[in-house]
Length: 134
Image: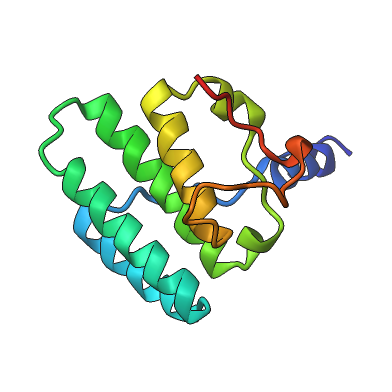
C-alpha cells in the first residue's frame, strides 16, 4: 500500500521542465519565423517592432534585465506560435508597472495596429483603452 502511495505522489509531482531560455540571436530568428504565420500587415508591423526592440537592447549589460527581456520575448514567441495572441490581453499588473515612455510606446502600437495613424481614436470605446495618458 505504501509503495503505491509513493508512486502516486511521484506521478503527480512530475511536471515538464520549463523551456530553456534562448539566447538573443536564436530567439530573434525564431520570432521572425513565427511572424511568417501572421497576416501581411501584422507581420510587417511585428517584424519592424521586434527588430527595433532587439537593436535598442543589444548593448544592455544588466543580467537581470537581459533575462527579463529574453523571457518576455520567448513568452511572446510561444503565444504567436500557439495562436494564443488572438485571445490574450495584456496583464493589468504589467500595465501598472510601465513607465511613461512605455505607455507612449504601447499607445503608438495600439494606434498602428488599429489603423489609426492620424491619432484620432473616436471609434474606440474608452473602456477598451487601458493606457494611462500622462
